[in-house]
Image 1 (cartoon, rainbow, N blue to C red):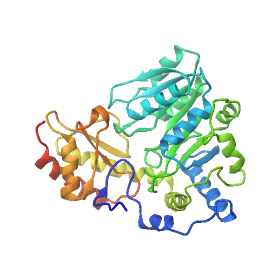
Image 2: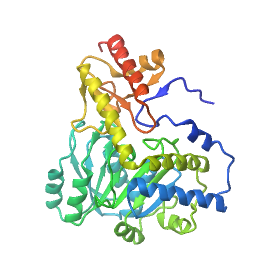
Image 3: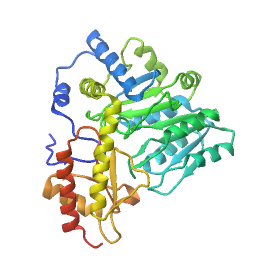
Image 4: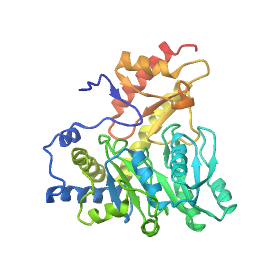
Length: 364
């Protein structure tokens, strides 16, 4: 048994309320019985309110990357051309998946910390009429950057392209309106701003995208949404699901929707602004130009090691932040404030960061 010795302020997984943890510890139901079908149906209904869509939603037993792969495998046929908007590691993940499935990939890429301007997307699409899909992220977890999905969706709709969005980190924290913003496919996961344990992912599919999926012959099995649809009509999943996590997710989604998704977005904005002001008062820079409300990524000054700061705070204050990923290791510290949080808790975490930065930021 893994015994945790710190409080999570990472950009996922996040802290999970006791009521949700208790729900995951309930005795297992059989996934072919009516009791499971009832909670599965109710969970999908609650997810529709989070995505703000009338489209199909499938719940998958996987990480968020599984839902990303399901989007590619069900939508993209070999030799289809896709444009990938890249401003961090998860944009790069879309590219990796598309290449594995035989798509032609074009990149619209900026350096880490930047966000793609909508006019750049429009210009790129107008140069190549053969581009069928645009893959992007709502919230780029590796850099903290937020992208303008509303404008992206309007551009794709105008130019008759399909927009596919990785919402894993931003769903429930940053504003997202799937149908109004003309998003064809969106993916999310349980362990971020929804405050449930990891283990489940979801994919939301618009009707136009579903018609393409029905004719897609790309090889797939576990993530075949045509199979999933047959079981979804009975409020079931084709494969044995993570029943315990579904119990917790249902409670988590109900909590969000009782409060109202707009109010939840506003709460995340208020906390994000509080965190950003605290960091600015320390004379430190926020790394992304357009930050998400799900996390704050702090630029560590040249000559200091963010990894050592994170480790010290974990040991000394029992609070865990996240290091940077890949080439960003040591250069940034990522503080997650998505999902279940309180202002006193965030304040305590920020005070711990300040203490660790002042004491343990060491020369490389």
